Length: 95
Length: 350
Image (cartoon, rainbow over all chains, first blue to last red; front, top):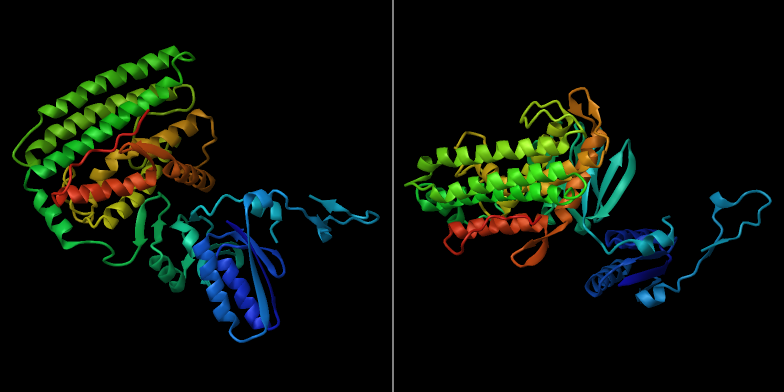
C-alpha cells in the first residue's frame, strides 16, 4: 500500500538519518520532511521500528499514513515551482 | 524532487536490472542503497532489495567492496562483461547452495545413461524451440507474406523429421552417441538458419549464421545476446549447485563451461533469437562502430533481453517469467541427477 511518511525532527543529524532510512525503503521525497511510496505492512513496520531506534530519546515526531487507491485518486496539489514562474505571471499552477 | 504524479504512477516496486555502460562509472553503497555515479554525479540510487542484478558492460568502471558485499548478501549477482558481451567474471557468495551430492552425481552421470538422457533432452529442446520460433514468425505472415509463411512451414516440417531421428539414437555411454546427436543438431540448425535468412531477406543483409568474429549486424546481435544469456545460464547452473565445467554433450575442455553450453541450448531461441529477429524486422536501426556493435545498440539489446526474461511463458501448466523458468530448469536438472525427478526440456510456445 502507498504510504506517506512525514516527520518533524529537531536534530539535523537524526533527521538526515531518518530521511536516509526512508530512501533505503524505496520512498521518494515529496517535500522537505515528507516521503511517499509503496510499502507493504511488513516493510512499513520494519521501517517504523528502525526509525524509532534512530530517533532514540531525541525530540521528534514521525507519522505514517497508509493510503488506499481509492483515496489516492482524490489527491490534489497546489504549487508554484520557481522554475515555472515567469515575470509578470502570477504563476498559478495546479494539477 | 520528483513530481508527485510520477511517484503515484510508479508501478509497484519492480526489481531493477542495473546496467552500467558509461566509461568511468562507479558503483558504491550509501546507507542501504546502491549508488551509481558518472563523472562524480549520482545518476541512480536504488535500495538493494529492489535490485535484481547488476551488469557492467563497459571498461574502466569501479566497484566498491561495500557495494559488492551488500549485493552478495542480498543475493544480487554482479556480471562483468567484456566488449563482446562475454562474461569474464561473476561475483557471488562462495559455496552458496551447492550440495556435494548434486556434484558427485553430476560427475558420475557422465558414465551412465543419465548423460545420454540429458544430452538428448537438450538437443530435443533446442530443435523444438527452433521449430516453434519459425512457427511463431510464420504465423504473423500467413496472409501478408505467403511465400515466407510457406518457406518457414516447410523448414519446420523438415526439422520435425530431425526430431524423430533422435529417438533412434542410443548407446552405452555419452561418447558413443555424441557424434550422431551433434549431427542431428547440426542439420536442424542449418535448416533453421536458412529459414531465418529467408525471413530476413529484404530487411537486412544476413550472410548466414556465423559464430565468433562475425561483423554483420544480425550475427553481432546474436553473438552479443548469447554471451549475455551465457552469464544468466551460468548463474542458474551455479545456483542449482551444479558444476558448470562438467558437461555432457559438450566435451570437457579446460576453462570451458561445458554444462553451460549444454544447458543454454534450450534457451537461445526463446530468449535471444525472438527479440533479435523482432528487432531487425521492426526496422530498429542497428548501430555499428566499424565491425562491432555500437554501445547504444548493445544497451538497447540488453534492455530488450531483460524485458524478454521478465515476460511470462507457459511452463508446467502455469505462467512464469522466463528468468524463473531458467532457474527452475537448472534445479530440475540437479534433482534429476540426484535421482528425484524426470527431466523435460523447456519448450517455448509459438
